Every structure is written in structure tokens, then in C-alpha cells.
Image (spheres, rainbow, N blue to C red):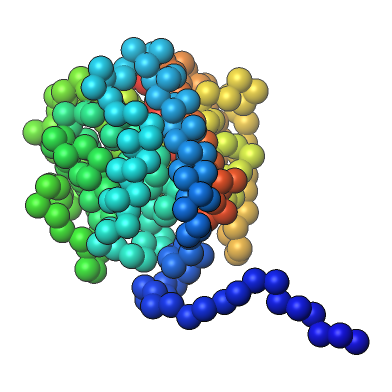
Length: 284
């Protein structure tokens, strides 16, 4: 039988070091052809543009917010020179895109992040919103955590930061710490914030997708078919978890949440690591 013919060429190139874990599926993998690069950027810009339009309709988009195309170009420049090439276990490329886009579009005067981890996300937001005061919290010490002069790093939980009891109204709160979304939204509202970006916003049907979902999540708090008393039970290898939805949860959702914008999954555009669900929340 004739040998199968190779229908594409392969050449050796100098490339960046290999990464491990999830990052192995992203680092050193990209489309190169100029026309295809333009199409890829346009696909992402289209989705960011839709979010931009919806934020404008809600009256929360600043007059000087950048265009969607400018956001994409800014993200690509910053992400290409990110200090942490391998952020496995943290915010990967697709979630990074939305983190950058939200910060760039809203142009907040302050950003408070809970869940520093290695420091990639706070560095990226400093790139997206260079005029913002950025404070990031984590209860764990992380070996080799990135330090950037534009970011204030604090060890501990933001609940104990009395100097942040009153926040500027345009503060963007970013919660990626696996703590109850209900609790975090209550704290943000009490301190005067009006907008929060929630990571790991899994609904009741997919809580098994992460090791410690921040129940009740925003998706659960806004689910019209999730009744008080519902027992949410899920399994991950070797463990079974259970959480029971309360009437107080559902009331808190109604009292706290004015609107939500779920960040579209960019996996369909680039096939990079699937992002955790991220939701932007407008507080009442």
C-alpha cells in the first residue's frame, strides 16, 4: 500500500519553554498567518463589542471607554509580555481576556481582588486599567508570587480591611477565591461597590466542575427554577459534597443583584483551555 502523504510542512523554530499542566495546551500554540490572526482577533472583538454595547445600555460604560478592537490589541500586547508564562491553576488565556476587557472597558478608579494566587490577574488588571488603585488579597502565602509596583498586596481576607469599609462607587470587585458568592456580594454592597466580577460561577448542574465551588454562586442565586430547600449534591473523585439552598439565599439574590452579564466562552474561537464561568454583576 502507498504511504500516506503529509499535506503540510513542518519546520523547527526557536520557541518559548514548554509549560506544564493546563498551560501546556496554550503556551507556544497560536495561529501565525496574518489573515487568520486578523480573523481570530475580529471574532474576539465581536464578543467584546457585544458586551460593550450592553454595558453602555446599562449606563455603566464610561464615555472614554476604548473600542472593542482597541481592547483586543491592548490585551494581545500585554499578554505577550506577561511575567508568568505558566499560570496553571490560575487564570488562563480566555479568562484573562475577559478580566482585561472588563477592567479596560469600565476604567474603575479602584479594583479590589480577592484571590491573588500567583499574581497574574492583578498584574493583568494593572495593564488594563493603569490609573486604578489595585488592592489584592489572599489568605495563603504563595511561593514566588509576582510583585508589581502598581499593585498593593495584602495577606489575609478583605473582610478585615477596615480602611476599605467605604469604597468609591465605581470600584470593580473581583472575586476568585472560592468563597460564597452571596457573602462576597453582600460585603461588596455594604462597602459601597456597585459592580463585581465573579469567577467560578457554576450553576447547580455543574458544581462538580471545580474542587471548591463558591456556593451559592450567582448562577444559583439567579436561577428561577432553583427552589429553597433544594439539596445540591455532587461528586469529585473520592468525595461527595452537599449544599442545601435556603430561602435566605434566594432572597439575597433578589435583594443584591440588579443585573448580570455572563462572559461568553472563547473556547469556540481558539480551542484553548476552557474558561471557568465568569459573570459581571451589577449590585442594587
